[in-house]
Image (cartoon, rainbow, N blue to C red; front, top):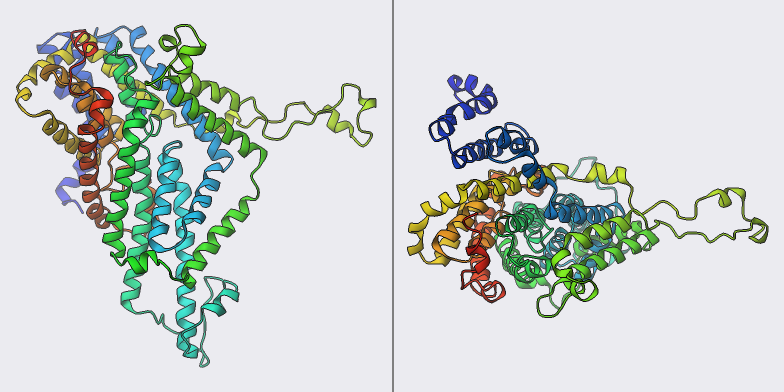
Length: 587
C-alpha cells in the first residue's frame, strides 16, 4: 500500500503526466527553435506517454499527424503516408492469413497432432508444448497462440493430477501397488467427485507434501513454457511480432536504397536458428528449475507409460477427436498458408533469381513481400468454405431430386473468411502503433535529429562493436519489461541507426540485436499479453516469473550476441559499412 500522503498524488498521476509533460518540456522548442528540437519535443512526449500508457498506445501514435505539421517539422501529406506504407500492408496481409488459420481451428489441429506424435513423458510433453507454441507464434499472434495452448495444458495437467489421486487412493484402500491395468479399463470419473470411505468421512489427500510441491512445480513449468515459447517463436519470422515489422519499416524509411537487405527469407535465415537455440536452452532451464534433471523419470526411456501419462494422452486424443476429420475449409486454408510461405521464400532467395525477377520485368524493383501477403489475403475472401455444387444450366436436365432451394443457391458458397471476423480480430491498434513509429523515424531523418544524435555518439567508436551490441541488447531487454515491445523498438531503433552511422559500423549490427531483444519480455506478467494470460490461471506468482525471467533474458541476450557474431556476419556482410547507409545518413 502507498503511504497516506502519496495517495492523492497517485490519484492524479495520469492527469499530471498527461498535462505537465508537454509543459515541462516546452522550453526545448522555445529556446531552440529548430526542426530538430521540435521533432525531439514530440518524440520525448510520445515516449513518456507510451511508457506510462496514460492514454492508449494507438492514440499516442496519432500525435505526429497533428503536431509535426503544426510545428513545421513535416507536412501532413508526408506524415500520413507513413501510416499505411508497404511494411504495414505486409503486416495486415499476414494477420489476415493468421486470422483465417484461427477461424477454422487449423492451429489447434496442428498443435494436437504434434503433441500426440512427441509423446507425454514429462520432458517430451514440455518440449512438445514449446515446439507447437513457438511454431504457431511464427505465423499467428503470440496472444492467440497462448490463449489456445494454455487451456490444453490445463486440461492435461488436471487429468494427470486426477489420475494420480485415484491411483493413490486405490493403493491405500486395497494395499495393492499394481493398479495400472485396472486403471486402463476404468472410465475417468468426474474430477469434482470425492471418494468417501466406509465410516462416512472424506479422506485427506494421501499424497505427501513433497509430491504436492512437485505437482505445483510441474504446473508452473508447463504453463511458463507456453508464454516463453510464444515470445521466442514470434522472433523467427518477419511477420511474427511487431518489433520485426518496425525494423523492416525503419530500414526502408531510413535507408531507401538498402537493396531489400531485410526481407522474409533473409530474416528467417538469421532468426530461425536463433529461435531454435533459444528454445532448446529455455527448455533445459525450465526442466532444471521446475522438474529437476532426472532423465530416467523425465524421459522414461524404455519404460511403459504410467497411468498419469496415459490419462494425458487420452485427453489429447479426445480433443483431437472433437475436431473430427479435416474439413474442406481447413484444407483450403492450409494450401493458402503453405503457398504464402513459398511465395515469401522464393520471391528473392538471394542465391538464385526469385519468381519476382523471372516472371515480371523489373519485378525485384516493384514487388515486395507485401504483394504475396495481400494476394493470399484476397483469395481467402474469394475461395469457398464448402465444396461448390455443380448444377446444370437447364433445371429440367438436372437431378430430379434437386430441390428448388438448391437451384436458387449461389454457385460459390460462403468464402473462407468474412470481413466482420477480420474486423473483430484484427489488432488495428498495432497497425496504428507501427504507423506512428514510421512517422517518427521519417521525421527524425528529415529534420536532422538523427544526424545530430549520431554526432553526439561519435565517442562510442572506441568501444568494440560486439560490446556495444551486447550492452544495447541488455538495455532493450530490461526496458521492454515495462513498455510495449513495439513502442520500445520504435523509440530505440532510430537512435541505434544514428549511432551506427556515427561510429561507422553496419546499422544491422546494432539494430538486429535491439529488435530481437524487444521481444524478450519474460520477467513480469504485465510485460506482454502471453505472460498475462498464463499468470491469470493462478499457477504462478510474480516472483516465480521474475526468477525464471531473469535467466531467460540472459539466455536471450547470449543467443542474440552469438547469432550476430557468427552466422549473422556473412549473411548481412556486417564487417563492412555499406554504401547505402553512408549515402543516406545526411538526409
